[in-house]
Length: 355
Image 1 (cartoon, helix red, strand yellow):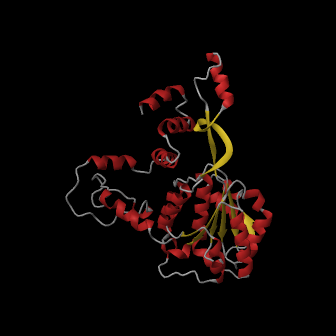
Image 2: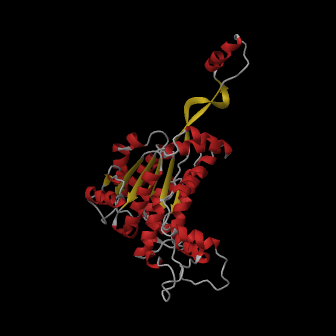
Image 3: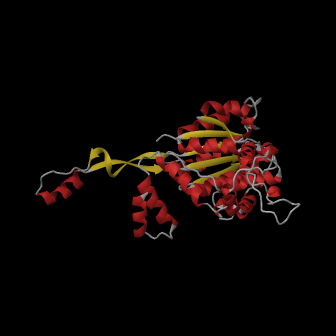
């Protein structure tokens, strides 16, 4: 930390990017430290919530020896944000910090389809601050650094000052780059309960990752929504998505849509070891043979194929539909995406992808 304090005198501390890369270069010593550093950086520098100064004051107070009141809001529920005792408007506000963790845990594990409007709004705010980190891929290029290969050019050039006698060896190490991410989301009638919140999830991925994210939705046809999601305002972005998509809450032909994607977009967006996320409950009106064939083609052309099913969060769910039966043999990971805890698990899995 002392080195970081000294280094900040040589950069423009008012620029977030300068501060970020300076801190990362001095505090991260291993590749696996980068996702944890990014998460800590985002959490520390995010916009403070309303009442943060009150929370700090509450932490300094001695704990009251009384039974906690079970009315703490889940995360940041709008209807429970009023501070203080309603019977005494002059009394200082009391923050029930003891119940914050329990309330948050309840909301983390609650199904999106069962949430109230206020709870969904709280989840959207959490998604906006989620930290995403996709696993890196090892390229064929090398860079200067401690590694298994010698850099003869740099070695000779550096040792010329010693009369050609080799006193210092230059090494090269493999260069790593982030993997591309492709998202294919089902917007058919059977997914209607989850569609809007999952679009917020895709928006969070778009602005939460350093690399570009290609996004598509499908029902009876495939539609690219990458450009629509580039708006900084999430409501405007979703409004743009509504303008470009014509088959909301209709039928589902997953096989035909995947065939369209493989032949029209596959070569453009699946290069460089892409990771593909398919979000669907597996209900399909098309031919299972076509779906199986296109899933196999998609698997061959990407590094990792992940199927996210919101129904998988139910204890009694079994993938018995023809669509799921045809797709599962070609999937690397079959995961739920029905609550906030499942999104957090997905974030960890994406960050842990091997090179």
